[in-house]
Image (cartoon, rainbow, N blue to C red; front, side, top):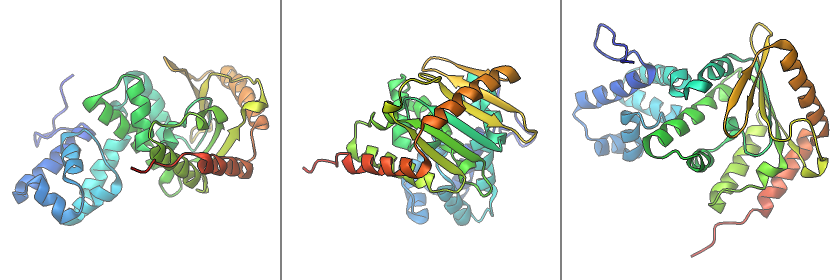
Length: 280
């Protein structure tokens, strides 16, 4: 499908429009990427990826560019629209992503991996590479995944509770230092007032969601839907009785999980046990 174009001739696709504005502003100043990097204090390779649409970066670099170009919050506004744009996700996820962005509360059971909303960039890269993604598509999907976190970090962000299996915490990244970074990030996110992390120990035994990653989303109108996912496919569950059955299973799993304070202590022990980067 061709990109939508406004009267100005610029794209109306949020991500494309954001990259167009970045390239235009730099061209108007007659700057190279290296010269721009020196002025704003960010890496030239990151700025290049932003302009090519390979990544959306974070709000800090965009605010630095707004400040340099004296564009008020124009770039930040375009960045927010690009981050929230569901078309950046694969087709089967798009309806779910719209509902996630609008949710007032979310609760998830994650049986084998750190949930996407709590992943570091390196964790997402390694995980998505295992699924076969490389190059530009990998960069785009990692950027999209990191953008999803912004809703949790915003003032008045939705409540988010996750039941995280011990199995996920015993499946480290290949790089020990990056794994420690992921554990530290998990602890830091759990400190936020709108985020609760509970660990389900393997010793808890069998339960009703053994291999099903399930996310519940409650919208402004009070309706709850569920996204059920395996490693190969996902399904949006909207029928009330089906959602209630899943909710009952989730509640029973939560009863088996450690309380938040005990969960934090367990993750801290995992961090203490995690190997450090070997010296050379």
